[in-house]
Image (cartoon, rainbow, N blue to C red; front, side, top):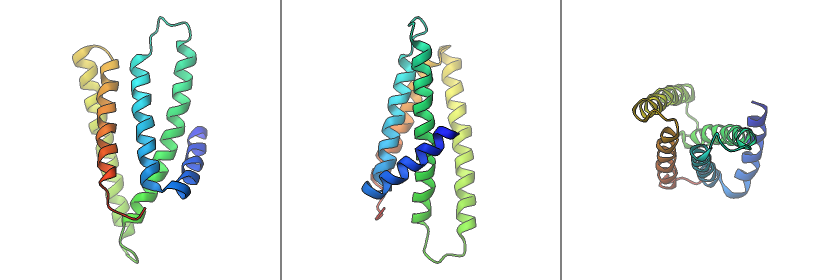
Length: 142
């Protein structure tokens, strides 16, 4: 959580320079790199523990930044002077929970099918790649 706080501050500053959409794209690309790095971890490697903790730190940093940027971007997409902001964010929260359930289900199906967690990381990177492509089509001034 502490690392995520630093990620939120870092991504916020970066967002002021290059915009939310670009920062989200960068964060998602880093997520893809994290998934591919997790795929390539080898328990036979004597430095695997150091690699694991380094990867965990990077994930914490990006997770905090991406969550902050996503909420900020979503709030900028809402209609101005709307009295329904609570409704919009409730909808956002429900979709977030559904995405978590769907993601965990797909992750577990890959583990069950291949008896290996590494292939689940590949499926996650495919989802992140799809998200990176879709965010580029978002037409807004953010």
